[in-house]
Amino acid sequence: MSQAEISAASNFIRTLIKQQREAGQQQKVVTRFPPEPNGYLHVGHAKSICLNFGIAEEFGGDCHLRFDDTNPEKESQVFIDAIQEDIRWLGFEWAGDVRFASNYFDQLYDWALHLIKAGKAYVCELDAEQMREYRGTLTEPGKNSPYRERSVEENLAEFEKMRAGDYPNGAKVLRAKIDMAAPNINLRDPILYRIRHQHHHQTGDRWCIYPSYDFTHGQSDAIEGITHSLCTLEFEDHRPLYEWFLENLPVPCKPVQTEFARLNLNYTVTSKRKLKLLVDEGIVDGWDDPRMPTISGMRRRGFTPKSIRDFCDLVGVNRAGGVVDINMLYFALRNDLEHNARRGMVVLNPLKIVITNWEEGREEILTSPSHPARDDLGERQLPFTRELFIDRNDFMEEPPKKFFRLAPGKEVRLRNAWVIRCDEVIKDDQGEIIELRCSYDPDTLGKNPEGRKVKGVVHWVSADKGVPAEVRLYDNLFQVETPDADKDKDFLEHLNPDSLSRVDAICEPSLAQAGAEDHFQFERVGYFCADRHDHQPENGKLVFNRTVSLKDSWAKMQKKQG
Ligand code: ATP
Ligand code: MG
Image (cartoon, rainbow, N blue to C red; front, top):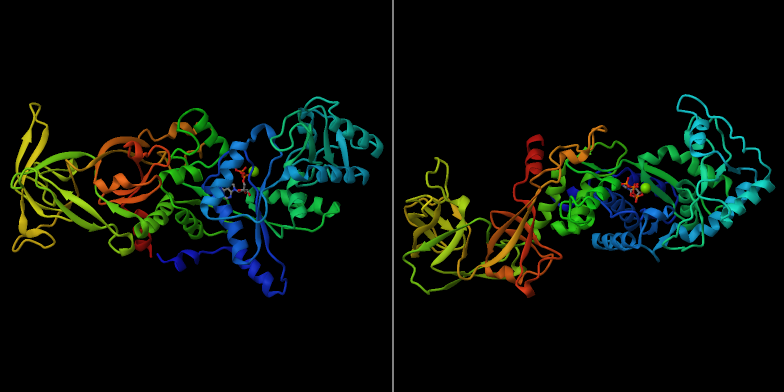
């Protein structure tokens, strides 16, 4: 699939902005990506990042990075750092400094006073349970709080005491005075401030009251001059409240909120709470475990920034939602790696072969391009020796009819080298095959043997010159398509027990030069990436992660449907 085809997917927000431009509304586009620093970013966030930064790029505008940090007990600097690293790795840069909603705490406090003075906010002392009772339900209106008619003076004094730390957590809240009978529950006197005696990673111990998400988000957008506040559909019901604050406060501008569907991927969970559980329970090896759908996990697995951006383009942006097939993600990944990953030969499950008509001690250096279509990637050297390894799966003692690889008496081509024939099978006392004795045909380098059909090609590595590596074979973390669909069932019951296996592999010697995070196609096997942390060639330790297999079910399916 070409880049143009990938980018052609629908994105109604882009269409909307084009229409606004054509209608002569020539404003500069300013968007923002507003993560809560309470976890690592995941593939769903990538969609929001590509949308917000992509729109700003396309229309010559700005995209801000703003940490939505109103919930200090769950937040930390570790997450703040990781989020910035992930966004940059994806290839985006925010306009100006990193911003924090907490930068606006003073302004928000002043705006709370503004509402109190206008008779539009009050300090309420209902406890959590009473609050629920008074709120009503979707079908029944709520009731007014007994504290609703407090005087402005009393509210100002009470709110000041809340701020000064005179009350314990939960004793009182500041609420907007809107309408307890509003059909939209978000408008039933929503909470603006809570008491939380809690140290904050940015503001230290300056505050013991913290604004709610709703009281913070729209006003932060307004302070920053955001023009298009793009968020996921669960905030649609909050939009009337978002607009109520902008109407009732002296804000410098009025951003417009537009909602789009969240990204849901099959075989994947993207709730931060669930991802955190996987980390905290030690089910995975940290937030960047290669099986995690976090951006840093995908990076470590071997995804490229481009493959993730292309995937987001392919998915498009709409309001319909639905579940995206994970194979579409793998398709975007293979599409990029096919063009950019160097080739290498690696035997995952080694079986020794001895070329009996090759002299002991003789070594020939064969060469092969590092990539079949990319001369710029140069070539690699493949030492050929008397003893080699091939993959155990490429030999069968009693092959079925369509088996074109090696079998007793049969011929096969060693990739980038000669044709060999298997003459003898050597077994140990238990009957296990430990070695094959083969002979090579010296006339077959780079050409087919005359009059003989050799269909199969297998990869190989010199037994003397090959280098050992640990190869980690990753698969989906969950066995079922919708691991968290069943509310009554623990999503952990659907874990795939075979999501990780390790093998001791033998690599062609050029791979000893691989740097951490280098991508490869191990010929005939799949795409791999040198592990970001554990691959240490300088210490003689090679570790490769399987990124994705070679076969591409999504592209095939598209063709069939096409
Ligand atoms: P979670 O529910 O996993 O905790 P969140 O929405 O609370 O995620 P935030 O850090 O608040 O996480 O998200 C930052 C931005 O990313 C928000 O604008 C949010 O709408 C968007 N976002 C989060 N998850 C997805 C998703 N699956 N698809 C698209 N956008 C998402
Ligand atoms: Mg959120």
